[in-house]
Length: 519
Image (cartoon, rainbow, N blue to C red; front, side, top):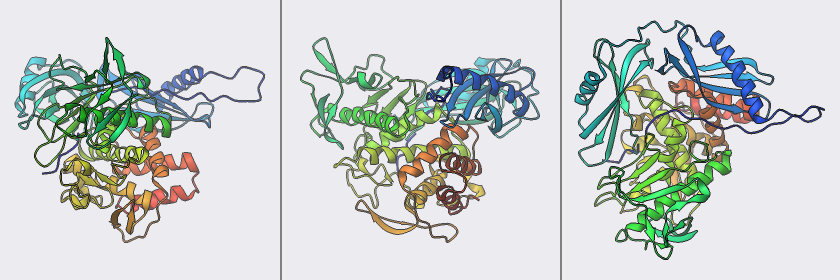
């Protein structure tokens, strides 16, 4: 059974770039002034165009300011102060803060529920815990309004955490009706999937570390304090990796530092990719680092958890190495980027898009790093297998996702009922087709033969351009409830913003989505 890389969901903020206007005798507005003006205008438009009325409130999650003067303000919605899960949206404004459009659910019919539960938090937690099969399960209930693919309902969102039977970290958001006690919905809350050091996969690479009390630690002060720990998250006393001479690992699993080198290097390269490609300053775009827990347990998986803002890496088994390969690290950290932007709900089609997003940027991190020991490709997780063969041993492939035996190449109505790791297939396929085109070819020594679902022949526009379009779609247009049809619209809008409505890039985006049956 192939491992299923995973992550967790939450809210966050993205900072915006300064854009000034020349040729005026008055001082140009600062980025903060522009941001404040855009938010104020967007709040007014939200009441007119997004159904925000009565006891509903707004929380600004993100503001993106374009060089053109346009702005995009992302809101979370509340009701009597309670979070409305699935009620988020983005207000788009033209230069001068004139209304353009809204992305996401408008809830035009309003929210007509009582904000007073009849079921206690303790009862909801007990019911939620009974629905999962976790070892050492713990639960944390929060009263919310659930509005994902349904009419709004008062519910307890219970975050149940623990361990799976294989020891891997587990988490599930279980939504229990706050009046009748029925389970309304659920989805995972843990999503799987300058000294020098020698890692399993990286070879010998430079590492940014910190000298503390005569010992070097795996803390990268140049990238927000990214820190790598030697042991499981569950142990409050788990130490940082330390070393006396700042030379880490030996390329073998016999040395515990070796996997730590890969993890520490992976988070650094992921940080650098997002900074170089999009000006993003860390996972949450706030300049703060994240934690990595290596040797978290004897299981075949890796995961991102938003509650701890951290990665957790299992040690693998007799057929796999520790899951610290670069594209796996980039995949997990990109779940954190998603949670701070579109916050795609980890269920149905939105969950598949969440997984595909992490595959896309895990791949892009690998191409960015371009390591001799890890040939960049469109194959996810091939390095973790002790019997290295990217033709047969991998977690997922983007050129033809169905090669794993479960993922789908083409969209269909049945997609929403699949596990999100498999419903990611059409979006992964779209990205490959947009990047490289269809048909048989060899890229960087790896053979691909990507079909289309409508029999068309496509020419790619390059992975950097394809990823730039996807990133803008994610950060500006997608919301927690975006489905595949919405992802097409988001990518077309993003390409239009970047290259113009009549551009070859927009035409290519439309053709690539049609090629995976998203019309």
